[in-house]
Structures are given as C-alpha cells and as structure tokens.
Length: 229
Ligand SMILES: *Cc1c(COP(=O)(O)O)cnc(C)c1O
Image (cartoon, rainbow, N blue to C red; front, side, top):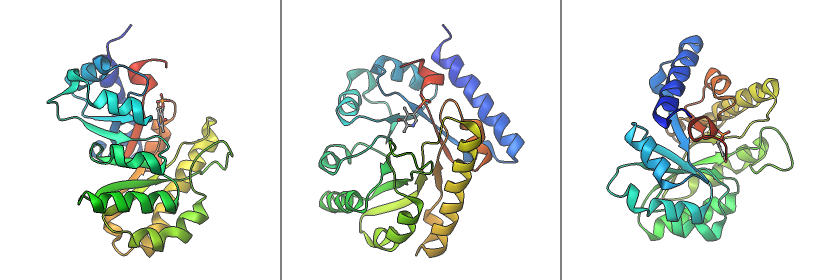
C-alpha cells in the first residue's frame, strides 16, 4: 500500500493540475484531510507529512481523537464537517477552526449563543442541499437566501461561505458545484460585509477536480488519502 505521504503528494499534484486547467492559483484551494473513522496514528502520519487541516464528522470520535496523546502539541486545525445537532455544539466549539455543516437557522442561533457565552467568534459555513436528495442534510438554496438577513445579525459567529455534498453522478455534481458558487454570489449581494463570504467547501475524493473548476476553495478528501472506510 502507498504511504499517506505519497498519496498527499499525488493529491497536491492533482490540485495543481486542476487549478492550472481552470486558470486558478493553487494557493486558493485548501485541502482538508477527512480522517473520520481513522485512528489518530494516521492523522499523525499525515501531519508529519505536512498536512495541517483535518475534517471530522462525528462529535464523540472527534473529541477523543483531538485529545489523543499522539496529536498533542501539534498545531493541526480541525474542521467539523458532519451534521451538527444543537445539543452537541457546546462540546466542540473551542476545538474547531471552522464548522461546515450548519443547516438550520436554529442551529446557527445556538452556535451564536454558545460563542457569546465563551466570548469567542466562530467561523461557519452553511450546508446547502444542492442535489435536492431527500436523504441529504442541508438548506434548500431558497432557504439560504430567505434566512440570510437573520443569520447575518447573529453575534459572535461569522458566515464565511457555503458547503455542499454533490451527487455521485459527475454531470449532476458539476451543476451542483456551479449552483453553490452562484448562490454564494447572490448571498454576497445581500451581505452587510461581502468580503467575509470567501469559502466554497465542495469536492471529495471522487470529484474534487470538477469542484476546483467550479471555484472550490476547500476540498474535503478522505478515501484518497486514508484508504477505504
Ligand atoms: C466523509 C466525508 C468526506 C470525504 O469523502 P471521501 O469520498 O472519502 O473523500 C467529505 N465531506 C463530508 C461531509 C464527509 O462526510
């Protein structure tokens, strides 16, 4: 089996190639290594190979991993990319650099309340259900726009952009990535401070090159780095 270091290197090359094709600067795409279900030892291996940002999806697993002795005193950054229930917010907010999966106004309100209590500011993304699949989390695009005013008013949290999980089928995925980019443009037009809306978190192991073509600023890659789950 290939080492994690060589897989990371290969992915960085693919990111560069996709950026060149799309006429983009590779510095504008951040790789989030999705380590859910994988042990801290593999996170450590990736970190030692130069990977800084990691994504986790399950609260309990994330809390245990982030406390693992193998990862102490290492300045890695955690992204919470899973579905986040209101009652779990309190346990993670001081440990994450960005929360990708906020999909309800009420969850954003709870996030704001907790951030205020801790006197911190939290960056977050709204998850959008661009495919319309009933099995997926995420706000309907119309709901994003209709909730925007209320979201922008919430103290101590900063909406930094949008996140989506695309359909497995690549033609559809491409349309969905484009839809997310256009939605972010619409959101900028009604935002009090559009300069904060910089992020499009989209693209996974199977479709990150397409996502980069459509403007992804963060790609979330698990399997291609850590192997099958
Ligand atoms: C698991 C997961 C990923 C990574 O998917 P891979 O196909 O393994 O790259 C990306 N985003 C989210 C939200 C995930 O839950």
